Image (tube, rainbow, N blue to C red; front, side, top):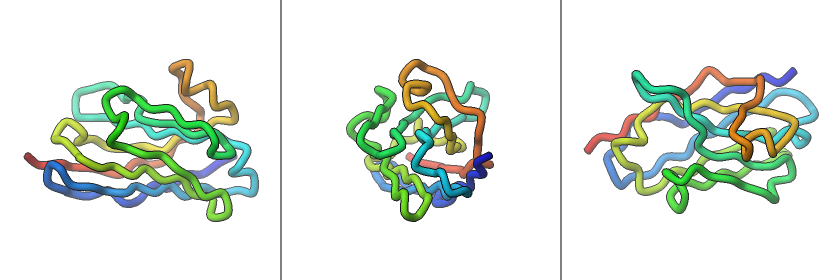
Length: 124
């Protein structure tokens, strides 16, 4: 069982930056790949980025590649999403997700564990 708690969302102007954090419970954090997803009003939840348990592999949606960076600190049981050059279309609730298998995300699926989400609003 993994419990996830996101933080760091907020309001920012276009072109600005935010860093999201996701704190995980449990002693086996490094055995889980982690993903970030987002959901805008009226839209389906979509994949943003993923990182393997060791942190050596990362994967991004095309829409955020070059602007967002996912990282993790296994000593702190935390995964981060650094978001730069934000655009109004990045406005969404951002969710943290966990799965034992990194390829779950690469193959277009998602894990069973979710956080409660954190709102990111980018104004033009």
